[in-house]
Amino acid sequence: MKKLICTVFCALLLSSTVFAQEKQTLQQLQQQFVDLKFGMFIHFNIPTYMNQDWPDPEASPSIFNPTKLNCDQWAKAAKSANMSYGCLTTKHHSGFCIWDTKTTDYNVMNSPLKRDVVKEFTDAFRANGLKVMLYYSILDTHHRIRPNSITHKDVEMIKAQLTELLTNYGPISALIIDGWDAPWSRISYDDVPFEDIYNLVKSLQPNCVMMDLNGAKYPAEGLYYTDIKTYEMGAGQRISKQYNSMPALACLPINSAWFWKTNFPADSVKNPAMLVNNYIIPFNKVDCNFILNVAPNRDGLIDDNTLTALKTIGKIWKNDGPAPKLPTIDPPIISSNLAKNQPSNSSWSDDMNIMDFANDDDFTTSWISNPTVKSPWYEIDFDKDKGFNTIVIAEQKQNITNYRLEYCSNGVWKTLFDGENGKKIKIHRFDRVWGNKVRISIAKADHQVSIAEFQVYNERR
Image (cartoon, rainbow, N blue to C red; front, side, top):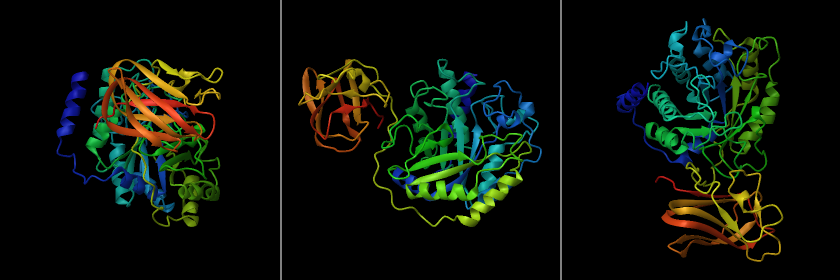
């Protein structure tokens, strides 16, 4: 298996089907994504045939049999709602691949359909003038890619599958990753190295925006492990319609669940006017692209009640052109946090809110300085010299305005930054240095000093 995956991976990298793209800046790609405003999420996979979003991971490929599959119908339905793109679930959490993959037998070519659904989807949406995006789940219950059991072979299979998807189907505007560092997966960015996957995606398609559905964990004011801030509304994640400051994506199903259920044809879908007035319009005003999920049925067609709702949306909403220019945004954090769970120290803390709350990888807890301390400080102590080139100070509430960042090298403290920065998420990137300690000394804060996370990274540049 390992030899097969390596062979496929290398062959695809060298394949003549890998196409050249004029590389755009991340800022340009983020702007283009926000400008798209509204699109169609398409949850269609083996769960469609089991009446559950999380099916039996051993379900036979023989049940996947959409006898009337028509991706052109999907595309025309998207056009009727004035959508600008579609995004298909190439592999969901149960691991079934609906493309002609060489990495596993658990795929559509071993189903009664024996047709590459990803190819038919990408061809149909492009033919109708729509952009193409793909969804891919890191969590894979069939192949046992799940918490506490990730192997090197698993990571290589993920890379090989993404290489196929980003090599064989033309330009992919965006890749939405799921089942990674989320409450429903618990697979960390260290278990499957995010930086490795991110760099692979960008090497294959530089103009592909990569998103991870991680909005629940990270602060709204910073881009952590994603090019676009994502909000999985079905999981309770909510974007602020007043204060969002990041290029964003919010997703919601038009039905009561993501994958098709036997009650869908008879049940009412979400009200079109409500979707337009409560989601599309207000989200677009705060730089958020809204993606509405539509679930094809077991024949491979969209139900009539959904088709009618999409046409109604198209009658009352139209894309009125590009969004306002986005502000300059720091590139996303994509590396592993070196400071996580390392020994830490600080000036006197307030009550129980001691130093290790600021590097526990939990943004809901904080180190809080005792109010009697006039010049608070906080420090990470590595066990040996480490190289690093990025430090991030994340606050729960914007507070610290003036401070000094230092690192200790051979017993000497050296300054990295000394000045003002009033942002809630303070990102500092610099040339790589080596040291065994990192420290922040706070000179001025609006109120009691509190740090949710003090993070240190060694980014590849």
